[in-house]
Length: 473
Image (cartoon, rainbow, N blue to C red; front, side):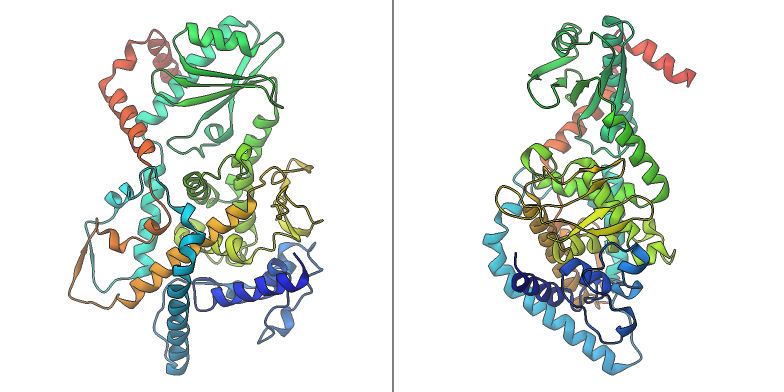
């Protein structure tokens, strides 16, 4: 993309952000993202050149003005208030016009597997009295979907039981071997339908023999052996819970990555819930697997971590991320969907985090890729194989536009003092414009819940020693 094209891209990003939640206008940080010059109104002291991209976050980003509340609020200055109202009206009109053009462009954003399933609304308050507080409503909804995505007691127990059965089977068949979990299960960042990633360490371990043992033990159904890939793996479904499992051998990179992510979670409390939301969203769009060009779990964690590190109000301790998830979710989609300069800027989360100038790296389709330094190995680019980065950006933009449009719509109709809104009223839902729960996930959770409550799993020969091991912990 040439300079002229980037300038158009930046202008569009500035126009889209005017009067909307999240990034208010192009400042130093947005210069870095969009590759152009920021507004110099009241910001002369903070101007920086796009070339100075290797600075730390204290220099590369603007102050907290870049992040604004979702709430409208009263303004004593009527002129400022009128100006703000005019901006919102202009933004709504622009977005209404764009939505017609975007339907064909974003047609693949609809999820066919369970569209319209919004079970997190059950976690909302029984009624919401008017006038609506859109800030509070959205925050309650985001908190509700995070709670819904959390594993239940039964899901945790049966996943642990599955790991126990696999571990006992393999370690008894291969004396001296050690079975460990890594990935999202090891970091507690898994979705209800996430696979369990495991690695078998030890000399003489063989994936074919492991697969045979697991099938003979009645653990594995639908076994797949992918032995000629860069990382040989066996994939199967647990015959008891239908949870999917991937097993590799003699690799410690996944274990180290899990330890790194756990360390990041301790530094940024908002990392886990926000990552769950982004992972779920990309899963809905089919963009959560590296082999299909999407973003892997480790890369997603680093993108979210960078966003939190570089957020001026978080880095200065002005806000608690756990109490501002709804605003942060919108701002994340705006940053990576509209403002981030994919061509020229890379992400580094080591230390306090920073952006850096990168060489132009393109996918096979000639489109730019995310460049994300592995915090454990700077020579490893976590975004290199995600060749559908353009689709990821497009879906982030779709989420931002759709939810922002709904926020404006609710604000416009939020002054009815004589109405109580039922919790299951989907017309009040902001997340439903971009999120849903696929039917397959709902069915899997229902099946596991039924299995747990029936206690039939306790008839398995491994159940008694498993439960005894839990009591000893």
